[in-house]
Each structure stands twice: as structure tokens, then as C-alpha cells.
Length: 471
Image (tube, rainbow, N blue to C red; front, side):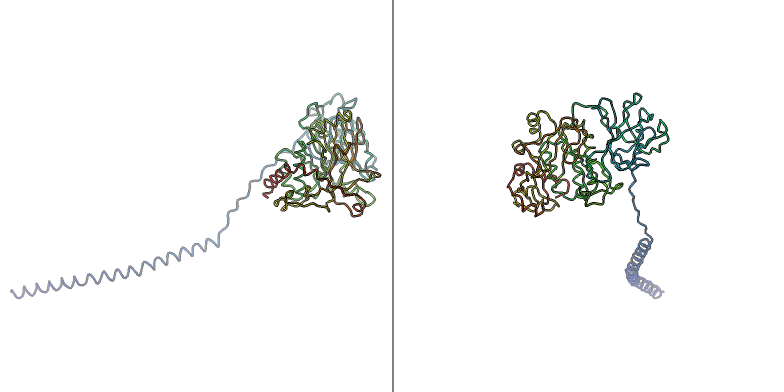
């Protein structure tokens, strides 16, 4: 019995030993399996993610955010008709194109004058359809074609209508071909234009305004900035530019000055209606209208600023009127008024500075300016002599309230006449290309007067180039 018990005890002990030996073996197997399975699961998971991503990429449609279109403001209306503020408006059934309409306060009777471009050979009869207090009134109009048209088929004209008692202050006007009905109702009127100069003013927001007509395909960026800054130095507060077209860089500069309220751009799209000339001679042009309609633009500018500016200068962007012994126009004009008995219209003789003759100097040509297209006016200090036996062009500074009709070089109708300013007092500096034929027959004179303004001009120009163009 004892042996049996010992035997059973040994058997139990051996079983326990076997069990204890088998436990480590099972743990190792489990650890091995765990080590093997986890990477497999991870691999399968990553493969699934990659497959899912690829499928989504193949089916992905990008979300495009389109800018919300700004709603255009409704067109301005007057007497139930659309109003157009800018030139050019075509008169129905006629080859007549309207530029701007203004109250004329200087005649015995109050009237509206509309600056227009007309086909001179066309037999025209007009009416003015006036808008007063929401009601329309039709009155007959007369017209006169300006004498200075250089022989082209189209010319500038004044269309005038006397204001009736029942419509003494019209806000808008439409020019129509003459209607058989008194109220003009038979006319197909699509557009009114505002009537400006409603009030005769004695106090003006601007002392000097410059009228530039016209800007087309303009790319002379550096000279544009230099001229604008020279205008400021001379005392100009406003520049009106009748613009047809320009380069994008030019437009950036214009936008810069518009934000300063220094420049007003008037859209000038006359070439959409009439074949315009790039020159002034009809004999060498097949066009129908002189030099982009420049004369009509000049006349419109005089009327547009008649009661906004004490003086208006009529010139181009490559021209600068400089006093010889004074700093600016603010000092110059009172002296001229005194010297010439308040005549109010001053002619400044043209002086050419050939672009082919330069005097380069780092002092007057900063490196940053060389990155900009255009003429550097400070490099041109040689002018050529004028021929006293020939007509020498000029440009003007005028009291606009004394002017009825103007042209490129002079006035056609005004109140007191005009005077040519002594070139020792002031003259016009004109940078342009000159033919060799002219250069060979003229004296070359050193005239660095523009550089007297360099200390103010150079930093001003550099600032504009930096702020407007990032140069």
C-alpha cells in the first residue's frame, strides 16, 4: 500500500513536472504567432488605406470656388430714358455724335450748348429733347460747324437750343433729328446725357487744370510720370485726359493718379464710329476726322472745367510750359494778367528738344528709371532755334469763361483775344523726334532749365514708380 501511494505520488509529481515544462512551450508559440500576425494585419490595413485613397483620387472632383459676380448697379434713368454720362452718343438717323452738353450762361438768353462731331456735308435739322422734373419738352436747335476742321469730312460743331420758360433748368438732354411732333414723341430716344454747368460759379475748386487730348496707344510711361509730377510742382490740381487706349503699365500709373483725385479719365471712343486720322493733314490720310477728334475733345474740356477751374491749360503730355524766372504757374499767371491787362488767354511759344540729342548723367537718371519704358525729359537739354520767318506753334493757358471755341493752336471765338507771352518770361518745352533735315538748318542751344526742378522731380518720380509699379 505504501509503495502504491509512493508510486501515485511520484506519478502526480511527474505530471506536475510535465505540466510545468509544457507552459513555457505554449507561451513561446503564442509570442511567435503574435509577432507574425501583427505585421500581417498592419500590412493589410495599410494596403487597404492605399487602395481606398487611390480610388478616391480617381473619382475626386475638385471644389471650384467661383467669385460671386457683383451685381451691376441699375442704369441711371431720367424721364424714363437711360442716361449716359460719357461721350460718344450717336444721334439716330444722322451722322452726328454728341460729346457733352452744357448750360451757356454768357449769352443774352439762357441756352444749352452741346459739343458734337458732325458730317459736314449732311443737311441736318435738330431738336433738343429736354428732361425737366420728370417731363420732356422738345425745342428746335441750331448748329454751327467750327471753321478749323483741316479739310476732313467730319468736324466739331456746336448744337444750341434756347431754354423755354417751362424748362429753364433741364437736368438732361437728347439731341434728335427734327421731329414733326412738338413733343418729340415720334423720336426713338435711347439715351439722355446730363446737362453740366448748371450754376455759374465765381469760386473754383481748382486753380489750374490741364486738358490732354487725346491719349491713344500710349506707352511712354516714364515721361507720363515725370510730366504729372512736373504739373504738381507747377501748381496744377487736376489733369483731364481723353483716353482712347494705352498699355497696361500706363493704365496702372493712371489708376494711381485717379486714386489721388489728380486725374480724370474721359473715355474717348470716337474711332468706334468714325475713321480717325493719326495726323493733321487730310492730303495724306484716308481718314474722315482730324487727329482722333482732338478738337472736339479740347472744346469739351474747356466747357467741362469752365466753372471748376480758374485756368485751363490746353497741351500734350510731351509739352511743359515753364516760367523762366519764377517757380510755378501760381506765381506766373498773376504776373501775366498784370502785364497783359487781364486778357485771360496766354500763348506760349513752342521750343523743340530733339529726342535724338541726349545728355546722359547718373545724377539725372536713377537706375530704377531705366526699368521703365519712356523718355527721360531730364536728359534733353538741347533745344533747336525757331525760324522767325515761319509760324511757330504754341499752346495756351486760358481763362475758360472767356472762351467760346478753341482749336489746337489758338482760339476761334473768345471774349478778349489772346497774347503771345514773351519767351523770356515763359516758354513751352516740347520733347519730340525731329528730322535731320530740320536739325541741319537750326542752331542747337543748351537749355538745362528743366533740371532746375530736378531736386523736387527726381524723388517724386521715383516714389510714384515704386508705389504704382513696384519699381
